Length: 214
Image 1 (cartoon, rainbow, N blue to C red):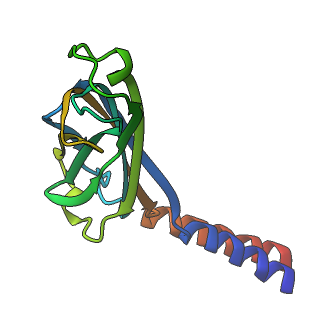
Image 2: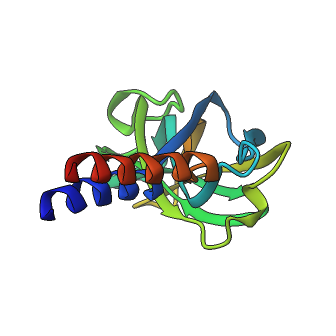
Image 3: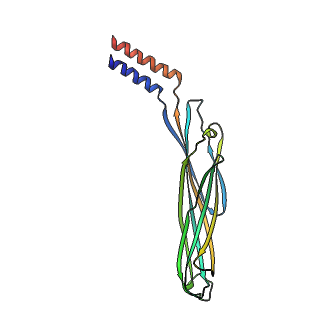
């Protein structure tokens, strides 16, 4: 009798348990000269007539910077000069700020006294690049109600490039930066069993129990 009841209980539990699933939306924006801004559209969650329930929205994005630098020291004395190039990338999803990341490139060289020619070469000049680096961040959204229903939700990015030199107050410099983005939005949901299906499984379990008693 104990085995019969356990079998019926397993069938009933299987019918009422919610099954988890996820929907992944991902993409990328190619390298473009900074500064720029762009928006991609994310499909909102379809409940399939109330048979699915959205329980979590998570996100991830990565920003990459590609840069070149040309430097010439005009100092009459030797100096160590560094070039820094930074991407400030901000993101929002459905109007909610996701924060920002700032991948940075650094290159340096030991410059001799100015050689008399601004040509970014020789003992007082240098060229760097293309150099690349990237940074990523991720998180979950607390308010997921705006992602349920028809239509799309905007995911927006703004890329700002910053560049500077350190080590000398007499430097001629030229910078060029490009930046790109990769992103991912994940919907995690549960499946709600149809009432008729639950009833059928319960009846089946009871029928098995009666048949075993006979």
